[in-house]
Length: 172
Image (cartoon, rainbow, N blue to C red; front, side, top):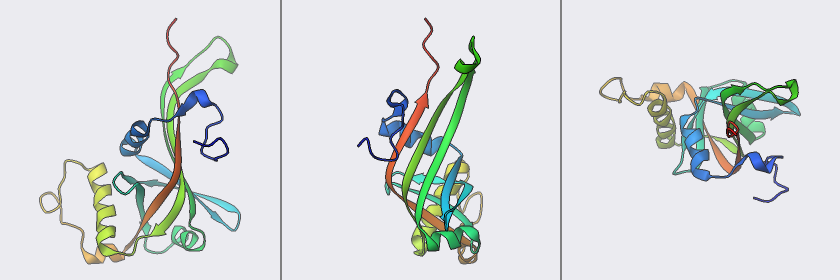
């Protein structure tokens, strides 16, 4: 990873460079934050998401109309983040208090998905991630055309990503 790239963590000792671990976090973590910009005004959208490893993209959805859709149409540059917190780590001094954590940050272009098959793919991926034991046609009605018209499905095409972690210090 080039040192001048914006995804490079400042502290190299905390960089999470194992792509399998980055993907595992994206598969497991429940909420992502999509950062957009509206004429220089930052806008952060917390959302459920699904990472499609085969396409190396992140899917999410919102209402068919609204702020997110307008921002995406005006400026498709996006930053995505997700993170988890582990154990709290007390210390002898206030400065040394800390926590375990792991995070992923991705940069790329977001696009409105217009192909019906890809819309279904993205939405089904979300359903499968959050409700893995429920199956369309068995536990619920599969996605219908009317539902596709009521939502906007987005795909973040990942151009670069990085991870950061702080595990608990080894006992010693």
